[in-house]
Length: 267
Image (tube, rainbow, N blue to C red):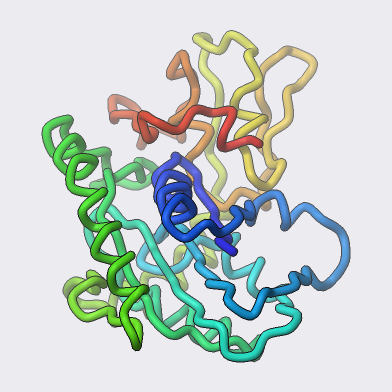
């Protein structure tokens, strides 16, 4: 059972590759989060592998992943192994440990945490941008080998995660100080808007995992103020580059995984 969340397709691509190898079903966290009720319950097989695949946002778990885990209930859980596979542009900080703590609160252990370096996509803050095309292509070309190493680690007994998680420098500052500020402030400062390039295609509304975006009477997208989790799907999947975030995204690049189309994100 592979629980995944993806904004620009990196994590979905990784989840799909792992599903091919292990034969596990894919479950969209964003779709599940839209269901009513306080708990989200899933029945497990005895031989089930439970894998969480998700992006690192500001050196911590994507907010929707944490919200999902807070509602998670695994039926028939005995000693099945649980894994975290996080995608990041450069480094993850304490993301794996954070997810471990959140799962522990639900009575679920996290046995191993891995990370995969994928192209950068965060463009909503000064100093952050997509990778140059050469670096983007290098990361995409190296990703399959990273997945293979993780597969080998998962198949080993016990599972091994040595050197397969990129914590990076100053993890305490980034994960314990910056990430809480991101959770508290950044997601509430919703400055998305559509420019005159908008063709009212509705793709931004379709890919939004939290239904933050609605198409108004004018045909232009409108963003709610408090539900955005800054997954950046809307800005990167817009076919006309018609979405900006204040002035900070102007002249910055756009990226989504070349093999993951908007339809796959929204389905």
